[in-house]
Length: 155
Image 1 (spheres, rainbow, N blue to C red):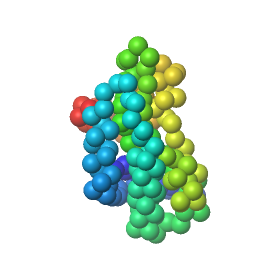
Image 2: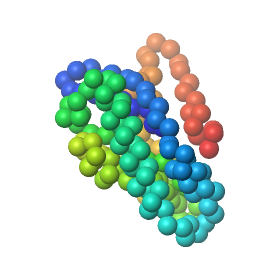
Image 3: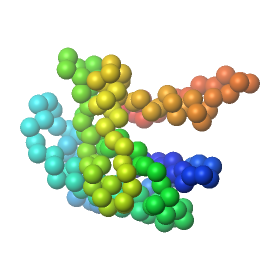
């Protein structure tokens, strides 16, 4: 599950993590979707809905654990659960589940989504927030640093 950066303004951002397991059936469905080969002619709408509901539940739990009210959050950023990511394909694309409208409706917080598709459309690799995050969190004027994205290697 995603890690969350929660920033209730005007307080300094607090960094915390929360892990929320997929229910058994959703885990199995998501694993099966990851194995699909193009063309993806399977209806993924049920998984999209279930992942959105699971992300919303995880958000509620994280807010509760952090003692943060939903109305104190400006927005939730969700790139979704990647099912297929092909930025080098002849027609580049990335497919995520985790309907952001369900997350927004359930939590009452605006959700910003579709980062990957927009970045690929602009000629990127579909990870536009990673370099900005690394710069903001790890940059140093006094020492050189190397950041290794193990998620990219794992893919």
